[in-house]
Image (cartoon, rainbow, N blue to C red; front, side, top):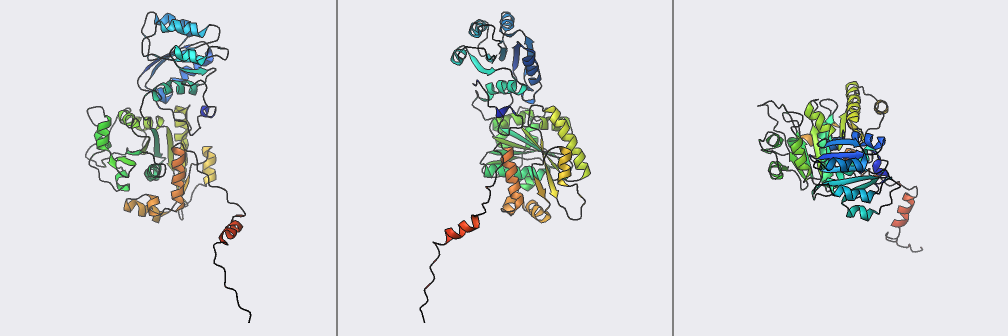
Amino acid sequence: MTRLHDEDADDPQHPEEHIAPVPRISVQAFCETEQTLAAVTAAGQDRRLAKAHLTAKDGGLAAAIEVYESMPTPNVIVIESDGTRDILEGLDDLAGVCDPGTRVVVIGNPNDTAPYRELVRRGVNDYVVGPVETLDVVRSICSLFSASETIITGRVIAVVGAKGGVGASTVAHNVAWTIARDLSLDSVVIDLDLAFGTASLDYNQDPVQGIANAVLSQDRPDTALMERLLAKCTERLSLLAAPATLDRVYDFGAEAFDAVFDTLRMTTPCIVLDVPHQWSGWTRRALVNADDIVIVAEPDLANLRNTKNMLSVLKAARPNDRPPLYCLNQVGMHKRAEIDVKAFAKTMESQPIAVIPFDSKLFSTAANNGQMIAEVSKNHRTSALFQSMANRLAGRGEVKKPKRSLLEPLLRKLKGRPGRPSAPHRKAS
């Protein structure tokens, strides 16, 4: 339960914040001001409240008490106090018409004088001082469930190519492997390219079952089923592999993968989606509902156009989230005309999360051996790029190398002197 939220967390680009989506609930808000009414209405369109049925009305505490005298209360009630009425008295009246189990969020006024302890005693689950923005409302409602349930709410990272063949799968697999190994986070890679997926090849696995068994199952997938379908790649990394067969056509509705993602969120801190390059209802939904999106592109005109379009559409669909990220792959290919990285970034109006150089020998060796880049060449600069991406996408921020001091060579020499054996003295002849 919180009274004031961290100032930095209000920034949609703040990388540390992770707001888990809510289950299927009903939320009713009673607002006193137009600003709060607009914020609550906008929150209802946020991806994290997609499963919630949210309605917003005018009237504050008085209206809520009147409504619930004749009808049952929803899962969550959001009440705004304008400071003109004793809030404790109003909450006592509300408690008389509230059903057991209903959770209450109060949007307070700076003029409220009620002690926070008294609000808690009257069953208030969260208190936020107004005026509020859309993200404040989303955060407050979502925290009621992620904080109160003893479950893990995993972070979902979606990686997709701006064009086919740009190496998005390779980036996704290496980033997931690095998160599991270097950050010690239990992670799952889901290969969503059911017909042509390469995750099992890249991790040198041959699982009999995978994502197709989960999504095509007649029953709703549960934790036990997911555990059976996961292939263990390393101690902390598991794979939900694609069948990579053409014996059937894989056509899905927009919500086909929701149950799979929701189930894995409850047990796994990090889930990396390897999204195929296609634009359909379910791929768009997977991208929009992810906590972070990475678009992988090559530095050419088609990738420039596609990346720009995808960034624009996904930003509009996720107004309260950090903007999608992008990385440039296979940069510096011999004898290929390329768009300059600076020009590419200028068009995108943002810098790439990474610029991965073209190295056919390194990447082909890793692919043919079923290894990750760091396993082939631990000290290669590309391994460091994947590590930087892993830190940022896992919410750890960017790892900055300490600046090298100009006195470092001299200090190294001075430090080494005492350990050196002294030279024998020459005898005078």
